[in-house]
Length: 412
Image (cartoon, rainbow, N blue to C red; front, top):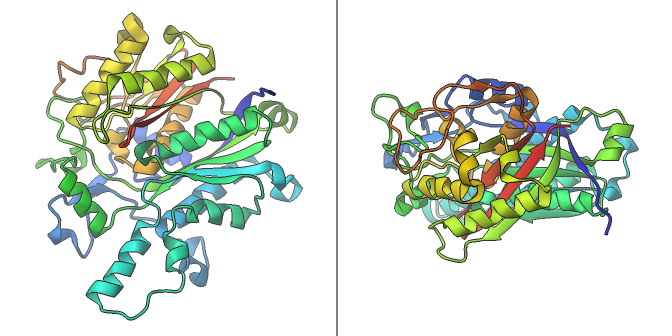
């Protein structure tokens, strides 16, 4: 089977810490948190009153009113991030063979806002009918379908829903589409907009959300810290343009990095509790796919949720896979700043990891003031780090349900 190299040529992002790639990365490097108190009409009914949300997104700045009204927030995010990525890649879609151009997108909750709005109308307002587009706004593949429609893509269009690893899996599988010659270009990433009353209450019931920091709500997510209390829900989207390397070089594209390794596995142990063995399998598979040794990795963007079990498990898995080299590799969790974007988390963190590789600058794990003895790696605590050399980087995504997605990228 054909095996081609895969280049990253475009990035697009909407996040709680910035709505373009440069602002996003600058704020990460500055240790700026996007976590804040919710300002909604239902906040008084919540136990957890914090989230990492985007408060400066105006749909009407991107879509005409009638179109915006037929798109869930998750779809609006995806389309805008895609538009950024295409522009960043310098692609002229009018001259592309769109039959060999596809989109793979990950989401955990899909059109959560549209589903909730429907329930409110039915059960609270006692409405007799729902909006005609309710099904089309709420379905999980609405975002990827709208991307394909808006940009005329007629290659493969698939939505991946594997909880917190959804967009990492989407990107990894998109890499394979190009690598094995099925397509020439892929848009890949994820989108999530789940900060609704019902969704937050469901997460409260699961008892994995962080306690609000009494002194500073923006510091509520504390990955790898002994005083961590849980994750903070977030929203946003990130999309990357993946392209056959030879094609990208031939058209003179700006190339951020090469996608060289992808590993996915399932814990098959417990639906919410991660396992060292499961996470290790995915990292080992990514290293094998990349044809790298553990000591080739220069930085890991961790899944790093801030929950007691995940952070200790991920630490143990990294040590299991990387052996003695684990203590020499910088590892950071950008969720400490942008929160946990669930289905979009992997794509957002892959974007951060790509920017780190290009700039040779590592984003910190902020709020790490009380080290946990069970989490004893180099987590780039509280301050960014500048490196002289950085060649290969890894991004980890692990999920409820047990599906892992690990991506390895290399400089070009």
